[in-house]
Image (cartoon, rainbow, N blue to C red; front, top):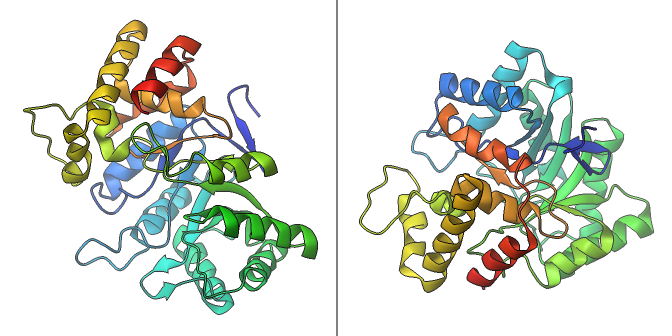
Length: 313
């Protein structure tokens, strides 16, 4: 493990997780390969995807991102050098966490990823129609079979997370080692509080998604500007809030002090929060990567962290 890498169960991950949601959506295979190559060349090793990416695009079925990553792994022959995280439960044909669904979904993901194991396997959304011991036993079977190395949860309540961890301890089943919450400078209550407390108490690593609030925290959305992006509507909405404007101002102040990009500062704030191992951010082009990878070199002062925390309150 290098000095900047963090433990995540038995895995060791770089400070930035590369989001794979854009692969096969706004980035075609050639662009995706270029981004993946540049990410690994820049010291990254932690790639995040899901079986549902990108089923929301007309003409796509889900699994496009995994297919692109699988083709890249096969062509670069670097499977053992990267940590691949994917998710189960949201694919249009395989929704929920019934044991049979999990079993079918993991095999489909392994086929698309062109590998015989997944490093980190998330339950994408909790499925309260399935009892905790039932889906945990199914996940435990995958770990015992060598198809999955570690398991994790996303979009789960503090209560169900606590129940899951207790069940794993009681029954001797595979245990969640990480949590993927929606968390960033303009969305703190989606993680802070009860959910973060459970993670801290049980030593879970947090891997926040929407770390840059769909691009808003890159600073490219300003009053009077137009941004050509598939996610413009969601990101630009933060400009209409007092919190959004305060956060942008604080990001600008701190970025200027470090000659850094606002995106790097936003990720560095997240990385400094208790339990956070590696924020997730995606890049459609190689040019977007340096600001993201720079999170590993930027340490904010207590004063700067406080400024950002207060602006985002």
